[in-house]
Image (cartoon, rainbow, N blue to C red):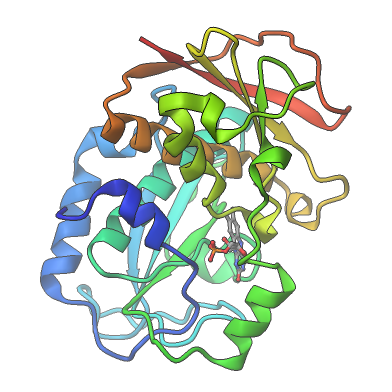
Length: 287
Ligand SMILES: Cc1cc2nc3c(=O)[nH]c(=O)nc-3n(C[C@H](O)[C@H](O)[C@H](O)COP(=O)(O)O)c2cc1C
């Protein structure tokens, strides 16, 4: 890809209205080749996910006519990418990471995407995929070229979930423990990577990630502040774990671009929590 990954993260936003232009064959090939490389479908703990390309209309590669439901939220999708994972806590986090990396790759190729976990018919997608016992389709994304002129529905959706309102640093990032807010100046070289987390997508734009930077600046601890009674968690799996995988993906890709090497670990620093809804998830250890 020609674009820097941090530029792609900044550029990406949910696209719900597409041009009718078909996706170029070179773009399709590029995504299929990306998916064939094993390192691209590995999460921070080495887990993997099944990902399938499905043409939205008849005349796809295999000539199948596909009737897929996204409840009118998505207009003119040319194809979809659908994910399949085991319905387990860690697998959902890894899925968020893997699928978001793919979404960024597609964005870098000029495609529009939209994480969709709620507003689609799982049944219609399940017919196209082979699910094993215990597996679910947590999310899909439509693909196509973004239409500049949005429908009223797009604007309404963005308004309802306040998509353009990303929480400020003071609500998300902490210094040494939950008692102190982290200001960008104090985050040093990690400031840009944290900013990439802040800009990431999340289910209903809840932005449930909370991050504590250790005093010695060598560890970055990720927490999930569960939204109480969140409707997205009532689909039979915990949607918000996916958001943490997305945060980890944006953070790691930014660190790599900034030349800050590190590895993922799960080691709860026992810093206490902001409230009873906040759960430790994983840490990035700078090397
Ligand atoms: C896990 C997940 C599930 C989502 N599910 C839906 C959905 O069902 N329908 C929808 O229109 N948008 C969905 N979104 C998109 C969010 O509403 C969107 O990311 C958020 O409002 C922020 O806007 P942005 O992506 O343009 O930055 C989902 C996003 C994530 C990360």
